[in-house]
Length: 229
Image 1 (tube, one colour):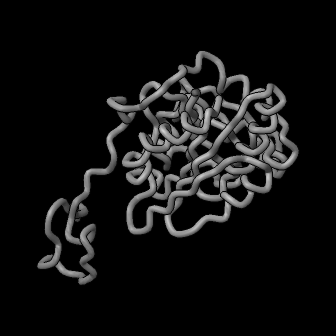
Image 2 (spheres, one colour; image 1 turned 135 degrees about the vertical axis):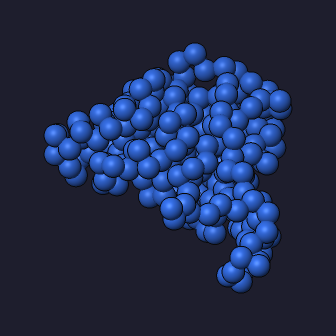
């Protein structure tokens, strides 16, 4: 089975891109499953079900969805193998723009949209910087010049990534994405002992554990102060 990890900011068009890409996979008689990770709620699993795609949904609740991903990805792969999928796609929104759910030996895709602003790429951390493929969406809404400037900003942040424009409504570019995802894709039966490409945020403080009061007396553990000098 081939595993593909897709992440990106909320509402960047991840689900639409994945659905159009699945259409291209199906044209090649490949069976595809999806696991959707989110924080509080998601109806994206209904979109996959309507398209006839086998899907599972994981809601992280109070936990960061990418920490939730790292804790569950091994079971996700087991489910995909049990279902005899040729490809399994995981989808997760890096809500703080700091996390990176990518694994070292698994293809990682970051979806980002043209409407987020030309300075957005430099505000996104490992989720964009460590991706193998960067998919830029909503290019039909902006001018050609804006598309080129935005793509250049993405390339400046992650010069080694393949940049691809995909239209989540028409599906333009989805076939090209499907071929890139299959290129040199490793077949796997487990992700045990694989490593994250970048460590998760190192915060374990009183607020992580449920503290709600403000004040230095309540700030225990790993905390960071601004430099006012």
